[in-house]
Image (cartoon, rainbow over all chains, first blue to last red; front, side, top):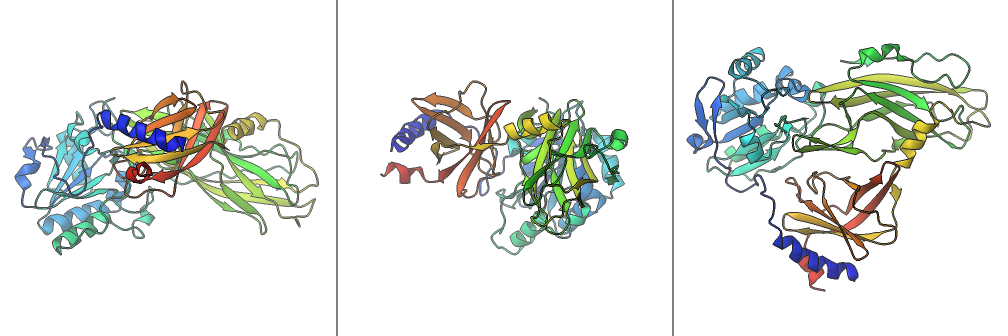
Length: 203
Length: 278
């Protein structure tokens, strides 16, 4: 019973220590942000209120990102989502000087290479928005509903690998969440383990 | 990306079983080979082989739980009938701080050992070939996936001797294989934190202690705060952003130094009020 007694003391202690700021949570409002896109335009999350928004963390040189662009998986998801009125924001939080960091021109060249058409490619070189959302891998996905509530966060799909052959066997969580939101259903998978390269934040 | 190395094995001596380095240059940032602990396979016993990873400076590969990013190294075996390969006996990893994200894995040289059960009816004088497809992700800042096919062939014999060339490599890896600890303990979810208390004889000092959670989606991967209290060791983690349900038990690997590692599994209480109501 010694352990239980100690538990109580520790819980009090833990409560006294300020809790770490949790990034974001399912069912909570998705925090607003403002970033410059690859064409120099200022974009804010709040300007898309009333629409469903997908956030996708990106690093053009990451093999996990390659897997989902070379296969056409992410460009296809982007095209289907935007055709249905969903806003798709691709975000790069790679710090200047780190692998995967891009400027606007390189971001646009990357999108053109794969025929990818997100609504915008946002540049977050100081990692502000990445840290705000707790983005830790590329890709790392978030789905926000038209009321601004976070409905999904996690991996692009259910099989953590760099193999394109796995895509067909995997559950694609973002299209699943988008169709459930569109149908007015509860999102069946609200979180999954994000997998990929680490986001290259400034250390 | 797939690169295949065939390790041609001369008939004898049996010790000549290491991968020859020539194809190594083709593997980016890590040199991967398959090695055996002993000279021969003894019928009805366990033999140990291992994937030897020699990393380029500053590059690392991953543990079974890779942490915030990355992928664990994976092995798929093809063995003769009657032989069975176990899972990788993961040595305790290191923690890499990558811009505030934490990865668990290995740099420098490491051996990932695998136990192979030799069938009792294996015939002395015959030979057995073990083939494996290894997949890994090696990262520094950039990440490069790797894949290769490796094989070794070993003789079956009544007796085996340790291969002196790899003895220290296996010994180092086995020393860091988590030994089951006798401590009792409990993990409690308390708000945004998970508090683990361990109690018992021989708890490690907190100074150089490194702690690694085995399961994902329980705690954050920053080093926990460690405190020695009375006779107990207390580990305070942030709850994982991806926590959804309590694990049956919460499994931890404790690495007090570079020569020892302990494994402990503690019950997990998701509802602290249940404990305090007693």
